[in-house]
Image (cartoon, rainbow, N blue to C red; front, side, top):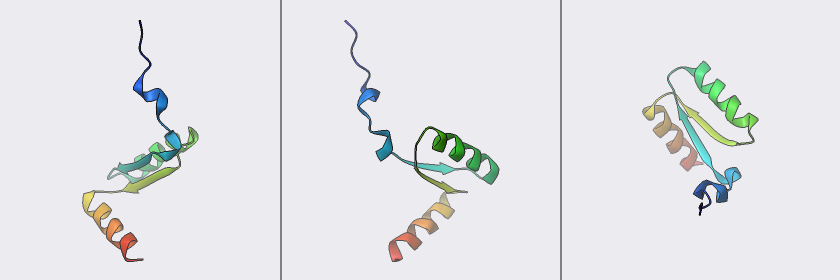
Length: 61
């Protein structure tokens, strides 16, 4: 007997994706690919420090 994959019950529209890449062109390519399969909540950071700064600025507003 085969069990259903646990991935079949994921609501992909609720997934948040963070791309960390020091090459902006690569990050944008990955973002475009993910958007083409209807994933919308995609954020890009060039490194972990950049991401922490983004997070701090979002929480101040």
